[in-house]
Structures are given as C-alpha cells and as structure tokens.
Image 1 (cartoon, rainbow, N blue to C red):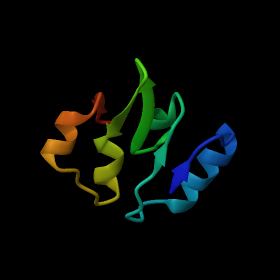
Image 2: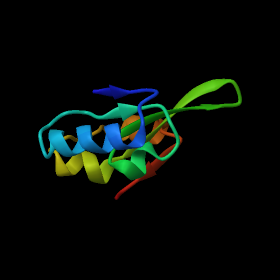
Image 3: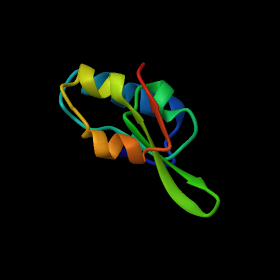
Image 4: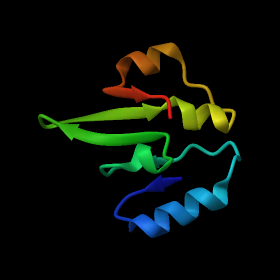
Length: 78
C-alpha cells in the first residue's frame, strides 16, 4: 500500500486495519516510519532516497535483504 498526501488520521486508521498482515506499507512524507510505515521515500539534494523501518516489517513477517538495507538512507527498528 502506498500513502501519499494522506492525512495523519487516515494513515493511522489504514495501518491499524492492515494489522499484522504481510503487506508492505510505503509512503512519502515526514514521520511515516514513526506512524508504523515500513518504507518512506524522501528527497535529498535533488535525489530520491528511502528509509526503512525493519521492526514494523518483521512484525508482519516481511524481511528486507541486507543489500537493500545498506542502500537505505536510514534504517530504524521500532
């Protein structure tokens, strides 16, 4: 599921409804990982980068390869 331009309550409700199903939650706004998202796209110096929340992914049975994690701008485990 990709979230872009959603309001905070809509994102939180959708993430809650997904529960622990193995669905990759991706977004493109500040604070998305902290809200429970797994992959967040960010623009840094005119380049598109991404961040990963491996804790949320593991809760849903999703594993990211080490090579992808090394390419991430930021990796958190929450």
